[in-house]
Length: 281
Image: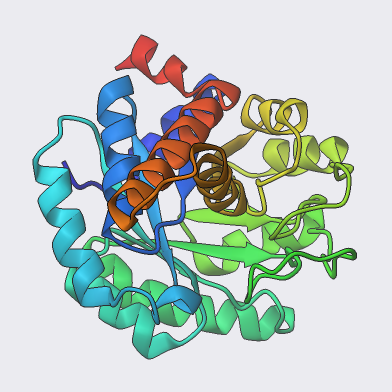
């Protein structure tokens, strides 16, 4: 069933777990994530980044997500990730995405507030929730591997002011992660996470989960983060499975790739302690 993240994030925040947000780039990856969620009996947020619209269109994503969500019993959230173009975000709302992100994190505070309010004023009357970002999680546009992050930490004061000014539904904060893969394991500012989680009631989300370390991510999931985005680890798991399986034809390549992503997502469900959802269902 296709739903918004409103109640699911609230439950996650109150009960100390996070919901995985795997990025899909085609029907195979979307179907794989929904199958894993149904197998485990747990909710999933399937996300399409605006930067990946060259791989699958908004129309294709909306049509296929609705079909897949209707076939399963678990909650499925269809989310536009890192939306930067207002017309694209509004189109996603009109097509049936249940959640959208406006990423104006590289703008100044006032501009970020203004752009976020514009999207909220469009999305909320149509029953769609909105995520925004304060601070900046590095390498957000291209998801490329990198040696250095251009991340900017979220301040407690800005988080509180931003939520009061926009009434945003969920807030992505920057506490040390960045998009792509790391050379080593990042140092997460858990103190800042705790301070922000205590200061606001709005659910918090974490971008750049891949290669951040299981212990780090488990700590985040049980300490105030309601949703964690995963992408690079999923596509890398697909490639690893392909290399190890040495498929002889294209159909086998697809099968191996889906298998790798499936096992990777199952792993993160365990790390994020999402199974706590079953205790309150």
